[in-house]
Length: 182
Image (cartoon, rainbow, N blue to C red; front, side, top):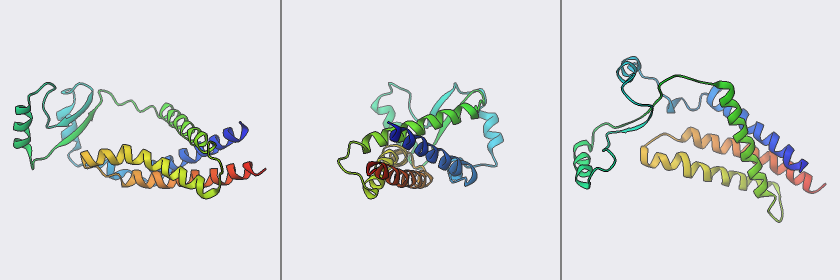
């Protein structure tokens, strides 16, 4: 249990620190949150006109007919489209968001360790490969799959996946294998 606890704490901190570097100091995700000189106009136009939620524009209302869908497709093919995430109030609770992020990082590493400890034999390459594979499964079925449908840039997410799960895999490969042989 001690091995799992220490592996989880250090691995979770590795994830947390990388995410801080990636989103903060290195600003790898800037391309996913671009600035526009028109933001004030857009902001003033949309403010108060939408209920809080996520929007895909253009689309059809729920329950629309196949004919409605076809008509919209014919009308908008080749035209601009957008996704909007609209919130009524800016409420960036940095301490709570960071706490929740750390909890998720710890839980993720705990689950990785749980899987790894089911292996018959552990060595550095097995742990590193499994860590990267699990990280890539998350990337492929999350950000990358969304990019297929919504043409988003996921290169920053891929970099995050490889770096953070690679470093966690190296840590756990060293730590768990060393503890296994003691």
